[in-house]
Image (cartoon, rainbow, N blue to C red; front, side, top):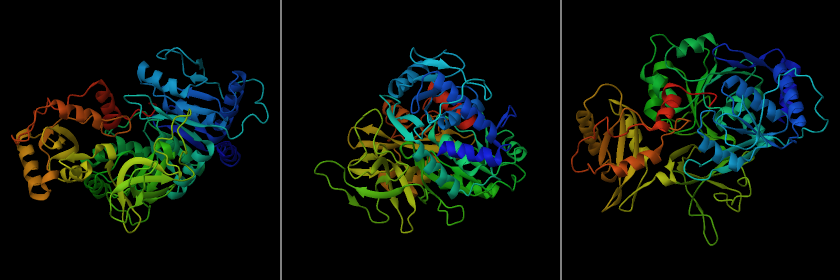
Length: 526
């Protein structure tokens, strides 16, 4: 299907741009993509990598990275996207699971010993034509998930899954050849790959790739590039809403898409109030080839909701799958485990690993908790392993976080569980102030607000004011790091004061990198 899309786009829209570099470093037309696909097919044939063979990509520049990714897909191979900035140990874990036949990169520096390194071919590189019949729809994308502290799980998304979800994205967001999207998200994650690159290809539209997100000059760049939609994450939306420009942004921007993590309703209201641009909240995951649910472009859009099913089926259940276990569907409004099924959803993890969260009936347990309202809109309550058990009372961090984010003086917040000798766990809050603030004063104000509005079990036992939250590459809060900090810090529940702002959450090297990625600079080639 993807090869057909490439050929069809080149036949009708050959000279039109498909990918552009936001800094003006170059562009790739649909005809150029077709030539690149043919060149990659010749290169991989000569290297002895058959259709379905795995080719890892580790290129520093977003345009070259994206061009190689789509062209190798079109050549019928499986792409293994790598983080160009990842340390050798992380790369080794991924390569050990993915086991690619070759790696595409400028050289072998930074790579552990293993597969050969290929040089990207020129689109017009001379050579024997690709062998007839050697590019069936055997290609795909191989991604690794849940490998931060242990062995990653391999997720193989085939051509049919990718094209199905990319087509759903294009239809749901009404993308046309007149659209010009903007994406500064990491190209080694499924969002940028499917929602950005492949949905743009499905719509025969154009995608402008950026190396990093920067608040400075952002709207001027959007105006200059004639952008019509923006692929973003909550961290970007929150930053833009904090300091809106004096002038209104370009009227041609139809919407901003929010993914990767829940968007606080307070941030959504601030953004839409400041810019008048609708924010389309969505929900997706790697195992579903990205998009699962999405709010509609034309209302009703419900703040705090991930929308309705858009590329997969969704159900909410209670109970655990397994021999002798029974799962009961939840009625509207009741929180349970979110499960998904559909053409874009994997039926097993790669490399023969156990099915794990995939039940015998084909439904995949996402590990998320949430409920569906009477209109079919999904509301996420958090990850099942993030639930705080306070003396038997189940506490969902997002409910507390949304309340804190609506308070004056709060830019961002995260709530995690800390060990408690009596209750088992207690909620503690990490808060990033919106501006200059005396830690004790803001902590007292937040404590008073929580005591006035939240049930006792939901009131944080401590407030830690920090300069930043540790974030992952896609803008999600690194809750495991916060839980470690919460458990290591003294119990301040009886003191009612905040921990010092400079001591609560010192960024580690990974957190500093994540901050550059998610709050000051998204590395689109990373």
